[in-house]
Length: 260
Length: 255
Image (cartoon, rainbow over all chains, first blue to last red; front, side, top):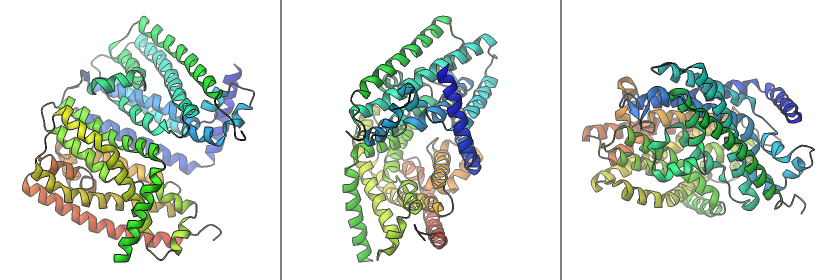
């Protein structure tokens, strides 16, 4: 409850700060819009030549793209402003300030600042998902929609945990910058994973679990799913929080601070 | 001219060594650059198996690594933080420093991408005809010039706006869509294809790959080269004009 109140405060402060740069807001919204339109157009070009892509119809692939965009937008709004170039913070000792605050350090380090305008991407992701649903032969039932939302929630938690674990690499290898590489592999999640080489597929369900995070909710919405999948996803999300916390604590034991 | 080439050579060597110090970062940059053509390869070989798209996307990977440009990072930053004032005092054109860093980064990208470019033909059984590759090389050179001028001009918008990086992002989206990355230009639907063939994005990205893959007729190749040279002339003029206008607005730190 305390963390939820804190999160509300973080969002309110971030909104106030960003409202002083309204032109930036309009520009970022435009960038997000052009990016989303380009992604959709690229997909529609593919489907002028083929009815399915690795067994996914056009509507299903658009839903997958929308799901990818929603989770990527949430990460960009709440996680990336904190964890991008995280190794620099470890290297410079900037974590000291976070560690002195009376709240869980992982929470502050990964969610302490937010970038509200990236939520425009989330809105566009919802619109793309809706456009994909409209192309499906059969509209999904409300039960499927509920399942989709719950799986989306589990996927977002998993995405946060995976990103936090990647950031923790900085405690062991502060000179290594995994952000760009992780993001490059993350971008592969906008298409059905089965189009890639088996080796890449394995990577996309383990190290960078974007295939797992986006494909399962998208499939639940387009083809239906079952409660066992939901239970598995929620359990995976809960376990991922524990793993991220453990890795974070192990990493912190290696952190020596700015003056050490 | 000889002196300027010497200065450029020294800048290239300087930045090759400087970026060697950040080799793990350059490695991640190169992999990031290699990803879009590889995704295109995966998407199109899955959508249209059996077509000569593997060789197109492999050639596109080479073109991308050989033409990579980061002036929105390397040069815009110098405008924003006032370091450009130092460059203006030097007895050499300011662009040489940026060009030197650009060429050094391209060398590193090609070197890092080399194992990938050698491995893919074995995995996917991609074949190239030597004649097509030779014909494509001048196009890669012109594309590299075009890409540099395009990104440099967008980076120069830093004189007017704090969003030069976003401007470069717009440029990258256009190259993705109309440069032959989202789909080879020949696979674009009617009107978009005509537009794509004439706009500069294909000239700076997909055109050399089309030649290397052997998908162009002789007349189509000559037309493509004509477009490249036309756009090169336009880009040189535009970059020079934007630089002249921008430098009049520039106020250094403390100015």
